[in-house]
Image 1 (spheres, rainbow, N blue to C red):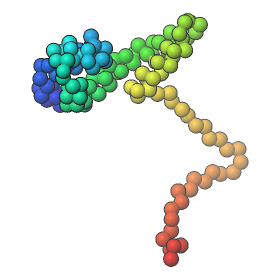
Image 2 (image 1 turned 120 degrees about the vertical axis):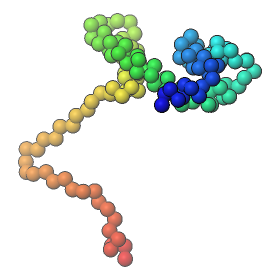
Image 3 (image 1 turned 180 degrees about the vertical axis):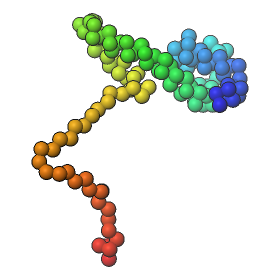
Image 4 (image 1 turned 60 degrees about the vertical axis):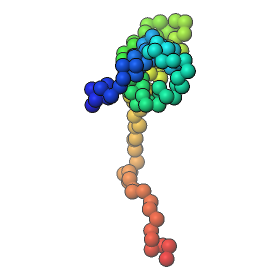
Length: 130
């Protein structure tokens, strides 16, 4: 499926995408200049047809940086007083959250008394409305 998308892109579009995720560092206008688009070209004319491909590549970029984010969190364990440690943790958490590596939460249910009943959700009864 990815090969079909790439086949449908022009050389200029491919150059734009490469520049956007590379040298242009996410700056649309800069990536357009690098790819050879005229300054008179509207950004929407370039970005509109490439929306899905841009999102796919941005997701890939986050996935590629997930290990770096994980190491960033672990490195704060070694030196918690490092300058910017709080910002590093925050940025790393955002990257990991967006790649699907989220903190796992567990709920513990304990009962020292009698039994526990789990009831189905209440629903409106049509007979009561008559």
